[in-house]
Image (cartoon, rainbow, N blue to C red; front, side):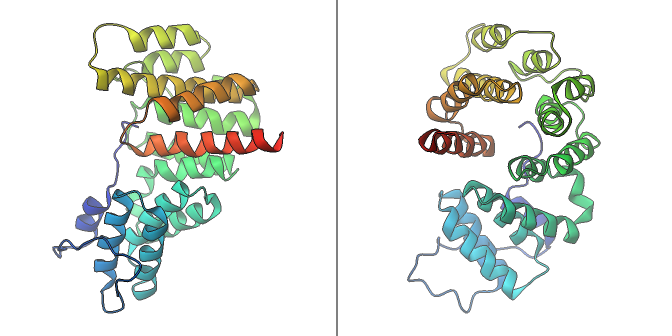
Length: 263
């Protein structure tokens, strides 16, 4: 998403004037009993960055036990619980973070996405409405509110109530927006994504977002096979270094599991 990403080092700086030194990523045999809560949070952040979500959750949990009001630990654990597809736990962590840092409530788009996957569609829609007050030019925010509303109230009402977006500069996000509004086609989205002469990195990013939001569009419309094709395409063939790739991966894994169960 183009939205502000609260990386843990940035969040630590926001939450405390104390400079946090760097530590090696904790291993299973490392002793962290004497570490402070903020040191544990830094270790958790490094584990998360290395892709070890389970270790990040373990370290963030230790941090919350030592300092229950350490907001950053709840935020990080919410993100890592999501990456582990533990949606209820993720939502509880984000809720606790917002309790501790109400001033940052409007920025919590990750919480909104967790609400969607936890089946809390009305809460998710409200979170994305709130985010609009922080950043009003993000197609993804409007789309995720649509997705939540479509589950709770139906596609037609979701389309009619889409949050207005004037000019998200990322290609092909405005075509995605028009698709969800009923004014563009899936081909329009893919044509825009492939237009011009983007670098390989830029093209990969464009195609990631195109396929992710085509898949989610089809899923909202009840077209399960088309949804699965595009979401798996995004997750498997167009990996990007962003939390949204984890969203696609988690979703693709869920679709695969459903397929194995014959659902």
